[in-house]
Amino acid sequence: MWQEQQQKRRNLWRVKIWDLENKGLRYRIVYAFIPQKHTYHVLAVAPREFNYDESHPLTQRILHAYEEL
Image 1: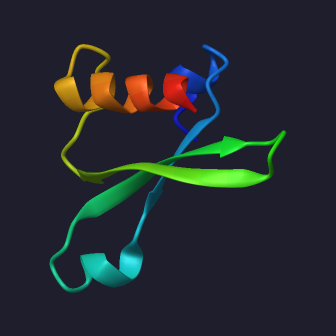
Image 2: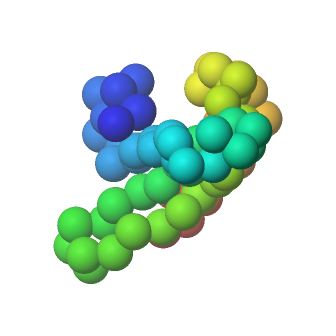
């Protein structure tokens, strides 16, 4: 879970893809779960070095996409 965002009542999650990491692709998938609709939405494929800081442009894009859901 993306703990900082969960604490703000945003149902945002991240997952690291281990199979791709073995091939040199170091990414995480950031997604949202909407329980009322039982749906998942992939909001970003981010490099593992991404630090999830709220001022980062990628974080801003993810949060905007989440609010649009």
